Image 1: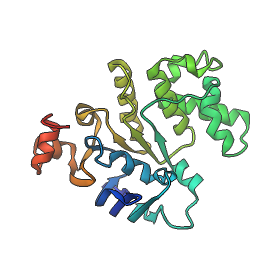
Image 2 (image 1 turned 30 degrees about the vertical axis):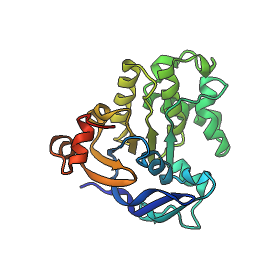
Image 3 (image 1 turned 135 degrees about the vertical axis):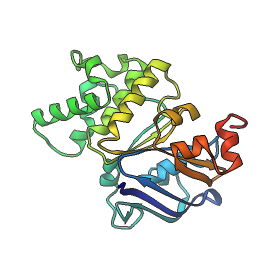
Length: 252
């Protein structure tokens, strides 16, 4: 029986007076991949960034409702933001390797989060690179600049940087948008394996990607949660005509 990892209740999100999420509800089960679909300006990116409070870094934002992580509202005043963002890590659409070695990129967050013995850091770096399906590509050249990696390898490196901190949830905002089909397939394979260890919420590159990797799918439109269900329910028998129109390419 699945356990609810994240529960969103009546969430509205505002940038100044502009409301971009309209009182939505959503449950995200543990150890599953939840894809959140929607065309531009549907609130998908804002939703992802609200889950670990990155969205509030923009001035003038406010929320109504609540986001519960293991039953605790992440917007409560006593929540430690550093710890929240360790538990709920984020990978963006454009890979951003740091101007340092592959090893130091992955170890960067570990070192920021406190002193660890060199052996422990090395073990964590190897774990993260293996989990992101990058270890075999780079194990013999960990000291070279991360900037020299291909685009797909750089994105897997960014995933590894998040995984090194042992998160419970990872958020991915169109992580394959600039990648070739081979790199995209490698990332999708690693995500399917990763869900054995953590919960994944992704704004997929396209509808086809959502169909390939998701356990559950949510469809947003203009800030509203139109529909949510299992992969089979949403793709085989959507309840709302707007969902059907979107996944069949009639708009978006």
